[in-house]
Image (cartoon, rainbow, N blue to C red):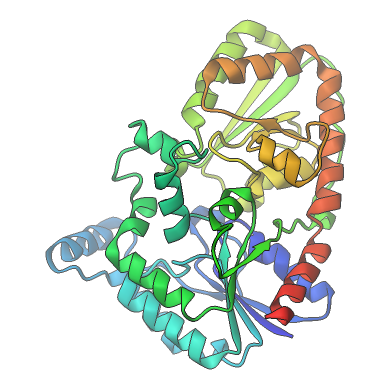
Length: 378
């Protein structure tokens, strides 16, 4: 099977590609390299006019005329290389705005992909029209919308999510849905909002290539090491403000018994190894299930503060914790961290359970097989 994976912002498509290749399929990735993360892309698209004077000029032109130079140049790059993007058995787009373009140019790119390939599928692995609508319509559903509605995030900082409420993105959503074979969710945060959707094909967990992630149970001697990785663009969306306040309390409470490591905006290749000596990793506070960073840390045997709500334990029939369910609550976070620091044996045990869970439910070849089954069925 010849497969084109469109978009990459978490290493999901790279791991899926590796799983599909293990099964003998021909696979390519096209998309932006997502800023500092710098994931491997077979056909990279450069996001032009995105810094310095040109970015300021772009903003002025957009505010005056509604024309976006970045979208135009993305389309130009795609069109120049369009011969590489035809005759695939399967094309999978990572979300409803995989090329980060305005409606007009995003639609033109997608029209080409729909017309020149056999089957196109959509992933729900991030916010999109239906997910955003569901979260706003159901404010009790745990999501970053709760932080926005509480006034913790400005509309400007939230624009990459609020855009899905615009008429143009609603039109793009309907255009995509009228052309895809179906939609696949990658975790419960996207699965639950899609349960009544007729195009929904089901949940396939994120693939993790465990052969690239070594598992080393961390001995605990004199210090508990806590790692907090921050992407400043998503600072409030991930609940990093709560984590930092909680860590301040922990540092005062335990002093030399803990070591706190904080990293900011580091490339993926650096980030994945920057927490090797940590026992505990703080990921995000507004999720029901684990995202990609959390899963990779769990594969290394870390205790991860992330999404692990009751629905997650029910979905996977888990009786013991494989991660700590993080909440946007400083006192709660301090209590959970304190419990682990005072019971280090639980850190070791949970880390081992986390690795076993990844091997059982997220193995990249097993996951690739599930994709093949669904793609062939449609």
